[in-house]
Image (cartoon, rainbow, N blue to C red; front, side, top):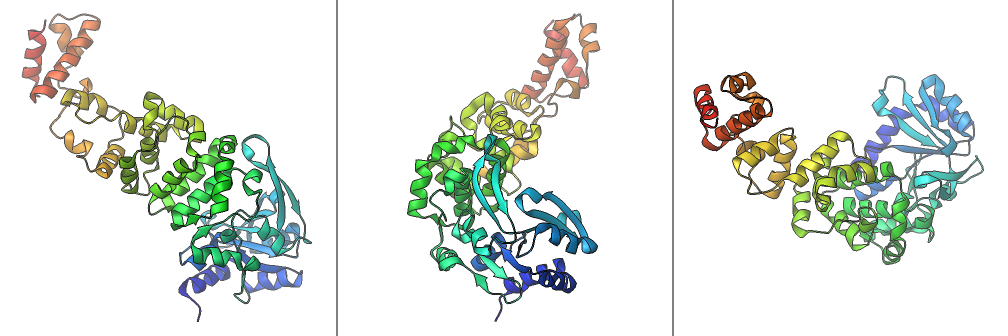
Length: 402
């Protein structure tokens, strides 16, 4: 009997590739398989949002010709043997990768973004499976028969043993990012990293520093958002020696691991703020440089790092200016602390511009130039300390410090 996930995946394929498309591909000599993450997730028992299709025995250009009458075809990944297909009636968000088998050689170029690729209808499914990173990601599924194609049974064995194992001994040499991917998968599925694979990771840990910032960001996001307990992956990054070659100035703190696991899956910037706390006032800029955080995320990172318990109301109000209160509330809740918004409830005026007096009132009291700003700041701090907020009390204070 087929499982629910098997029926779900078959339904996804049916929505993507009509009977007419399948017949045309078969007539041209092609054979269609699901491959990679979608098959792995089905075997693990997880619902996959991705659907990767590989078509063997036919050139990519011929696949494009077959698909064009049935939807939008984007050949942006042609040099890697990949096209994106959006069936008629679907949206851009529902595109799917369709590839032909390929053989990769060692990554080249800055940031290990480029690979030497060999394509052609003569390349077999098994050759494509063997160029992948880990055995659990090399599983394929015949869409006609439902048969799982697993080279020497190694993928299913690793799923049964709940382990991440590299396919090739040169896997991490070919692409150092695969070491981070091993960590990410171990964290997501609560798997262990197989002994020889982990040994090779530790041996080549320093080469992770050659990876580009945008590839780092993608893997950090996956580790955080797709793991039930991201702390598992964070701890492996430290224990394997990888983290010190990504961020050189951070240390593992056990309390931080608990906080990380208590965050919501949309709180990536807060997660990075916790990791980068040892960078102090350079945390935000470091995040932008090393993993190409957006300006907004970098600001939240710095907000998290700048937080200090025990601030008095004046310090709290100064801190709150320009801060993403929701993000800091999330951070403090995860720590088991009182939220920033609840701490600010007793403070009516956070900045000078919030008060019912302005610089003209200070000028009337006899202040000039820079002293006007100082007087206004003094009135703000007076209001925060005493809780007095009406105009008369604030004017009285200004006159008292003249």
